[in-house]
Image 1 (tube, rainbow, N blue to C red):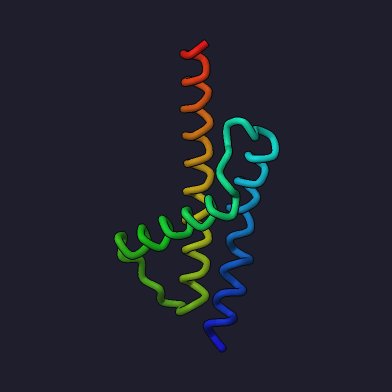
Image 2: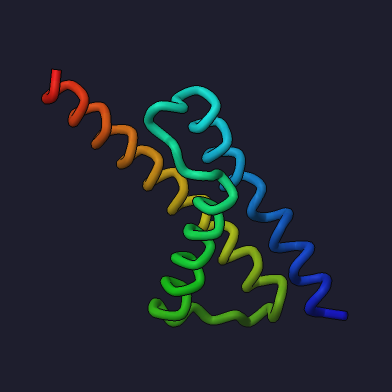
Length: 96
């Protein structure tokens, strides 16, 4: 039962990350060709790995882990989308 609640909460907390990737794909389709769901999943995997590498204490149990993974995923989404946009913009300017 807790696993189902955890999965539902994780989907809710991944909403901002998915929103970033969906908006990037909508407004700059030539720069962001990756599927927003795949990009969100990659950010979630990076968030889980970084939470365990940083040895984050989950004192609140399942809810704390879901919140930490959601926040880390949002941070990774914002950072990666900005880096990809900057890289591809500079690359396009150099090639012109």
